[in-house]
Image (cartoon, rainbow, N blue to C red; front, top):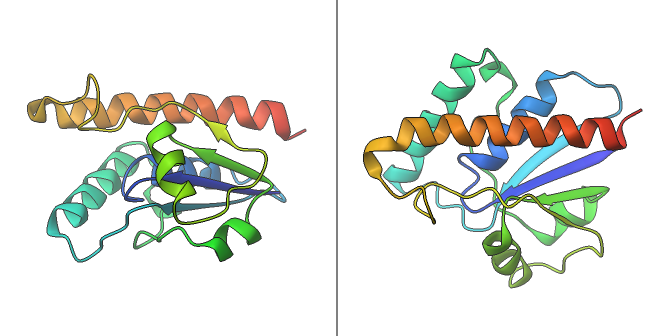
Length: 148
């Protein structure tokens, strides 16, 4: 089963979901992640990615992370669409302008840093931890529902 996690920059939410699911080492489960707006030339995006690696390190799963973010493409959607999970509605809207979405998608409604109630820049690390907990809970629910 191919599971595709999609967020905006592929530097936080979708990386956490992909890495956590990989860490469960489930047979026949192939998670990947992408972003709708990947800009690896942006130094701030690299900083955010490194912050995410630190979160994964704290939870003992950094070795399951990829090395760089990946831009969402139609080819990735077509090849990895058994389950497609978008981190929130904003990502769905952005994705629909670059690819044709499959009929069945999931919206996890995970608020990104810089959106809604997660705008205090002094709380970035606590937001990252909240997001990690939200995502791992949703991955666990997904596994219970679809993996038997």
